[in-house]
Image (cartoon, rainbow, N blue to C red; front, side, top):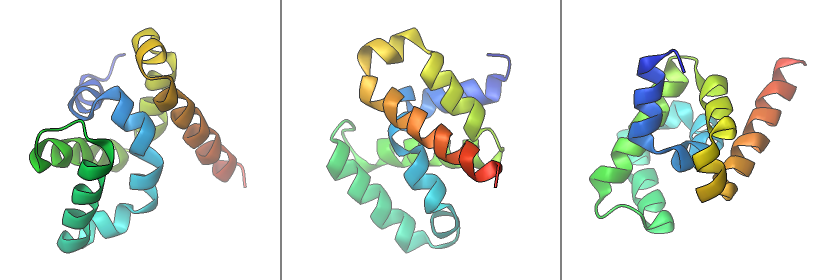
Length: 112
């Protein structure tokens, strides 16, 4: 991967998180960017549903990293990275499948 900033953001979020949450964050992008209370509640919901972080701060970092990916118009590249990663394919097949579904949805909207 050439784009070091994109790779850093994927690493900050975790490849599995990008795969599993990119679609949801993309769909709620405007609210997450413009409504602090909405964003705080979203982070709490994700924290409780995924159970991988020891505190809200870790989940907030993940959400912010995906928001940075979206703002930099690198969502497609990030999803392609997740899909092509041997490690993520082996360790997080659900995230890879969700990344494929999200990428397919994005590309179908681009052709309309």
